[in-house]
Image 1 (cartoon, rainbow, N blue to C red):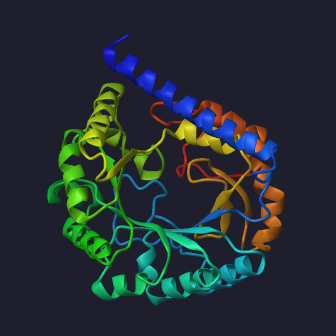
Image 2 (image 1 turned 60 degrees about the vertical axis):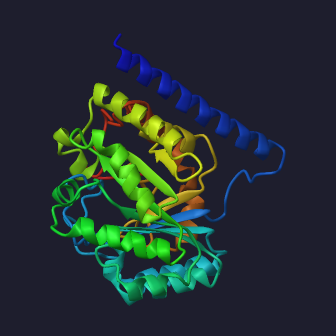
Amino acid sequence: MSDSEEYLKKQIRMESQQQKQSVAGQKAAIASGMYPPSFFMPLSLQFELTGRCNMKCRHCYNRSGDLPPDVMTSDRWKELSKELVEHGGIFECILSGGEPLILGNDLFDIMDILHDDGSVFLLITNAALMAKDTVQKLKKYRYKWIQISIDGSTVEAHDGFRQVSGSWEKAVNAALMVADAGIPLAIANTVTPETIRDLPEMAELAYFCGAALLITGEVFPSGRGALNDKLLLNNEQRAMFWRLIEKQRDIFAGRMQIQRSMSNRAQLEGAADLPAAGAIIRPNGDIRLDCIAPFVMGNVTNALFYDQWQKGRNGWQDQRVKDYIESVDPYSGKSILHQNHVEGDIVL
């Protein structure tokens, strides 16, 4: 066994152990009555507001820009938001796409409904449409953070990856505006075999932009990422990348948090071992268990979300879901049973 393979095994064991300890702690809290055994509404709900995007990213996990026209119009998102509030509301709403800023002022109308009910937001954007007036409007809301994608420390790396000229400059300028406005900022960075060694420069850039958090990870083998094998790391490259992350964490300790995306297998195992607390609603109205697990519990255009949540929140215990989790490689994140966002979703 090579040094790289031994290192990766050790890291995966540590990650798995940490996940098990977290799950054990929450189960103990459930047993003592300190944590609910189930949620009548999800704590966190992700709105994939549109399948439209102003970029054509080579790695896009849900193939934004290739999707059929949105079924969930802005008016439908507003109606859904009102329905959620009427049934108790949600603690956190993750806003993504496609590109959520494409919705223009309708985005703020949707956010207003949930904001007035006390929800916190996590906005995920490529920031190409972020302008000063946009940032001023966004200042109104409570955030976990605004997450801006910057996939390289250079124009060439980022613009080539996103396949839109000028996108790096727009993302960096937007990050500076968000941080200057006092909004919590996270930079999301995806690495490829060509950009692994640039992580130190990427960390410096994120810190320069005012980010409190740099989230970095490899291409998720899903959607266009699953169809572009040259973007995926091998184990030697993966070990190099993980070691670089450890080094950068030490360098930026106390100044900026650096987080490696948890392996797909560990994320899925954690979700399956605890009461369901979140879901994703797609542009076609489907209610998906998770961005990684290709399973659908219903559709918000057919019935109330609340009713479908009551029936579908135990979907993680379905044997097909368990089999899928077992099929996911702990290193690459690939499943031998199903290609996420390449093959069709599975209805539970």
